[in-house]
Length: 77
Image 1: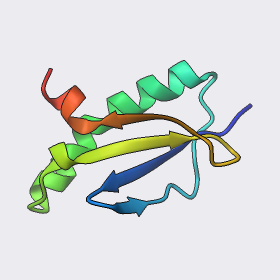
Image 2: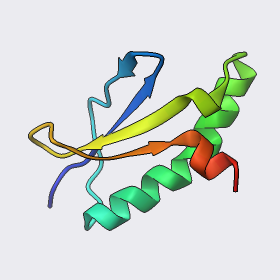
Image 3: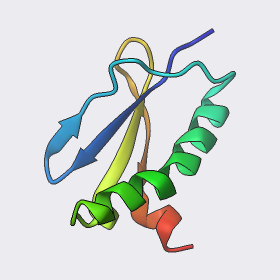
Image 4: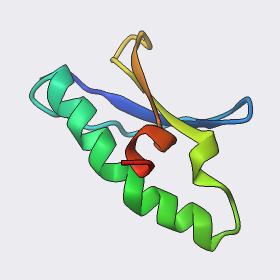
């Protein structure tokens, strides 16, 4: 099963996901990333940060960027 990494990116900083996840497909990885945004945003808010500035950068096992999901796309729904 492929491994997908969900790196957290904001203001030129990248917090790499060292473990990754093994969803069944890239579509499932996208849905998992979208579902993770609200709880991560809540943590950022409680730390005094602005979550709308963040993105998840989802990569595959070789580091190829598959997609980026801006938090604001999910939070503004």
